[in-house]
Length: 268
Image 1 (cartoon, rainbow, N blue to C red):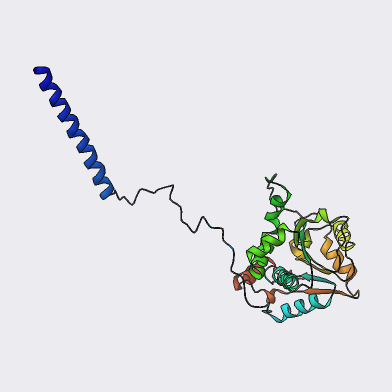
Image 2: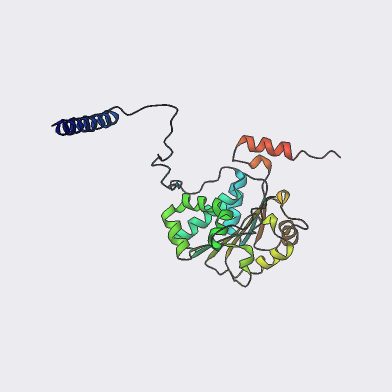
């Protein structure tokens, strides 16, 4: 009898504990603990899970300055155009936007984007991935321009099917740029004279080539291929050298002020 009574008490005690646990769980769900000092590390914003791409601009390219207008006209009317000058003047943006318009209209069949794979005073080591992934960090700025002018989906399609090609300058050797190609060599101040000569001798009949850079911002030692080419080729037919000034900077007024402080004219 004593054993049965003890078993009954144990069962009741267990039943009470189960009810207690169930009730406490119910209460915890009903009244979750709030503490401003606790951060859920697993929570992620839905916006962060979506890759950002700039919205496509519905407007045609418009020059922001008189100098940009001259540069755009030079690209449209010459086979080879040099755009030299300080950062923030729109050299790369105008060239990229004109290339996008030419591809969309069918005047060209392919855009080639290239630049020397030179690091700006830093050693990044061996980047992971295949060639496209390694070089993408050097050409991201142009991808943003093309995304804005063509739309990210169109750019992805063109990259997959060879309509837009991005490759290091070293991979231009042996190629010929034909009449249906728009080629942009960016950051050309980081080329050697030999590299620049190799690139320039790829130019075929009636193709469009734009070479951009800031002669004062070279990250290489020795002679500057951009400065050397401008000096050698200026005055040739179908070659135009456009020079931007600090007054042409459109990125921001602060950039103009910064460049003024860094490039104080030397007193004679």
